[in-house]
Image (cartoon, rainbow, N blue to C red; front, top):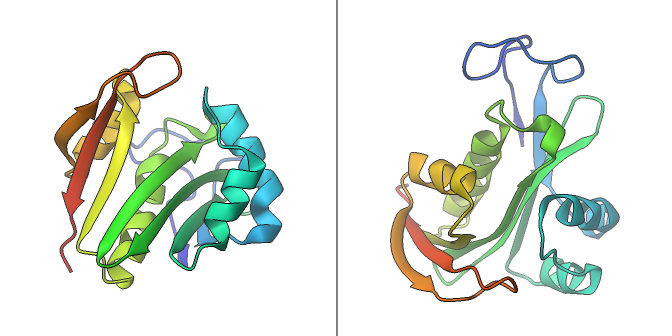
Length: 169
C-alpha cells in the first residue's frame, strides 16, 4: 500500500518543511517494527502501551497495524487496531510531533479505514481523551460520531469519549 502526495505542499497548500517533502508510504506493521512502535507510543501518549501489550496485540489474527513512513524510511506515524466479525476498532493513532500539522494524520486514518473496509468491517469504533481536541476534530472530519462516554477512564481521571463510524463500501 503506497500513497502519493504533492512533493512541495501539504493539504493546506503551505510549503512542507525540509525533509517532509515527497511521497508517504503506508504499509502493514509486523513484529520487526515493534521497537519503533513502542518508541512512537511513548513519544506521543501520556499512558503508552507497554511493549508486551503491543506485541501481544500485534500477534492477534485480527490485528491491523498501519505504518506511515517517509521516503527515507523514517517512521512518521502509526495506526493500531483490529478487525473482527464485521467490526473494527482503532486503538491508537500517533503522528510524531515534528510531522504534525500537514494532514498526515488524516491520510493515516484514511489508510487505516480503507484497510478496515477491505477486511469487510461495517463499523469502526474508537475512544479518545475528552481534552484531545486535535484528535476529536480529525475523527469528526471523517464522520465519526459521539456515542457515549467512559467517566474517569484515563489514569489522570479524564473521560474517554466513545465514537463510531459506519463504513461505506
